Amino acid sequence: MKLLHTSDWHLGKRLDDFSRMEEQQAVLLEICEVAEREQVDAVLVAGDLFDTFNPPTEAVDVFYKVLKRLTNNGRRPVIAIAGNHDSPDRIEAPDPLARECGIIFAGYPNSVVAPFELESGVRVLQSHKGFLELQLPEKVVPLRLLLTPYANEHRLKTCLGHESSEEELRAVLQQNWNALADQYCDEKGVNVLVSHLFVVKKGGELPEEPADEKPILHVGGAQAVYTENIPKQIQYTALGHLHRMHCVDAVPCPVFYSGSPLSYSFSEANQKKYVLLVELEPGRNAAVRELELTQGKRLLRKRAEGMDDALQWLSENQDCLVELTMVTETYLTAMERRQLGAVHSGIVAIIPEVTNATELSDGHHASIDLTRTMNELFADYFKHVKGQAPNEEINQLFAEILAEEE
Image (tube, rainbow, N blue to C red; front, side, top):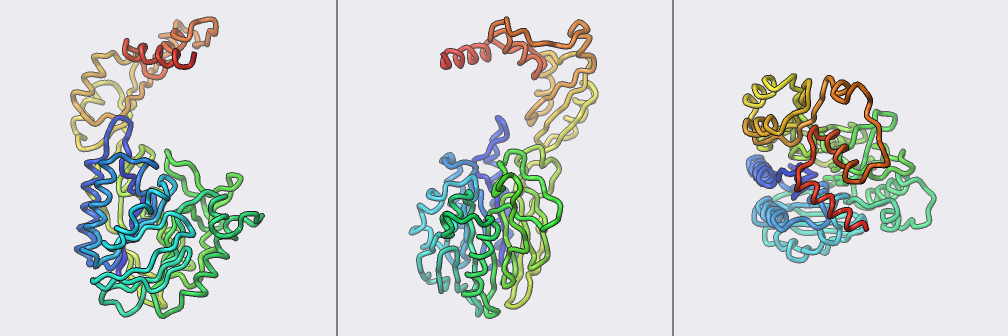
């Protein structure tokens, strides 16, 4: 049995003023082509399907079109769970229609997939809270899935029936997973866990979460789910949330984050992106193949020593999005900023690093004079951060904000 593992699509996400929709469409079509070329039997999307609870219409349109293509006219089921950026109710809303296309959504850890059968041969054999068993076309053995979408600590304990429990969250999860695995997951089928959680190897180094992600499932800022909490019957664990593809652990089975298909912040600069091809048979751990994605633009950081260095590098690195740190002796002028923008259309941010800023401030460190007006303080702060005074439009916007506060 071949499964394709992907996650963290974040459809609708922008990088400052830059839309990523065109890149998202391209990379998702690349994922569709991988599924077709490799003839996978099912696709797992492990959460953060959208970037916000209320995604733009364009993102929703792309999402459903891609899922429909992935299903291969209902012959290849797609199982998608909610992440911490998704609205569980929005994810599950189209479920009756989606099932007719071979698309299965789970928004909550206790979601129950309604039984259905398609002419293609896709059929729900068993369904329980957080569990699904599927018959796939032309496959002798069934696919069993433990599904744990993201939920905050309170909601997760409520979903799993431990509202007043003082147990650690990882213990609650382990208890629930073991109960499902003991009841449904023997060696006569393929057994997979799909979740959107922060999972680490006990005693191992904690990986960094994406720069613009809020840490999830940390009780007191310390609790993560351990790989040792995964039931022994599970042959592969498909995770979402962390944007870097990596193997968390090989015990009790391969535990992988597939990562996001695009780099979404400059903390992911120069990262390669992947989908994971997972081959399984009953009674054995999965064999995992990393398939690199090529359609997204690279995110690059450049520290340039002066304008000449910056202009040359920008002209040589066109097909990327850039965070540019400018090391100069004086603040950048408006003309210099326009010159940089004319050479490269993908400059997301320019960070000024003025080598003699102290001298430019008359040899004294800047201090905050609270007797000055809000407008004057704002102008000083803007110049400190951006390297130039705010223009009239920004000043007007700030004045409107002040008016609203009053």
